[in-house]
Length: 217
Image 1 (cartoon, rainbow, N blue to C red):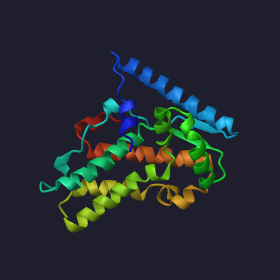
Image 2: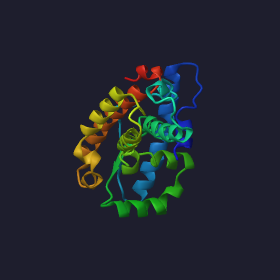
Image 3: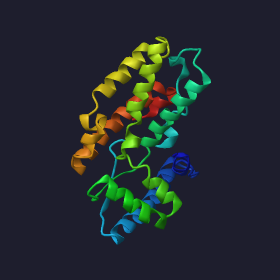
Image 4: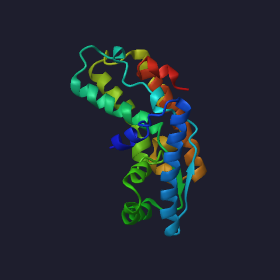
């Protein structure tokens, strides 16, 4: 999941960085218009917000800094870590929007009935809303993976890096760590919580990524 969207937002090949950014904005605005229009047809309001933290794909580290990990890490463990790491990078490239559906069931029914009306690319864009619980929970999931692996092998990951990541996760807002709370809060509080999470995600990418991660800001 996410490969098509990840490729889509990073495949502009303009000559300058500014032109690439402008082309990407144009593509995203087109997706947003499609989504908002379909919602409006059914009497629903979908509103996009500008995320506090958004990083261009070209400034992202391409891989994890494997020197932080045990030399005998298995290929399977590497694949698991790389998958979650890539999901975190995708999170910082994804849109953020709210809607007026009364609950998750109503939203899912609307999606089932209407998302086929928009282009496949816009649908993929829609499916990567930062406010989606399964999506924004990836950072906590990474914490669980590192913790579990470290219990079996204390040298699995650099101790300082692990401690810093655990500290970042511990300071996440309650509504991020408890999805049932997230569902109950207002749209404004959801956006505030996700913006806080985005800052934490950027920090974790900087800690775990190749030196290219220093360009994150």
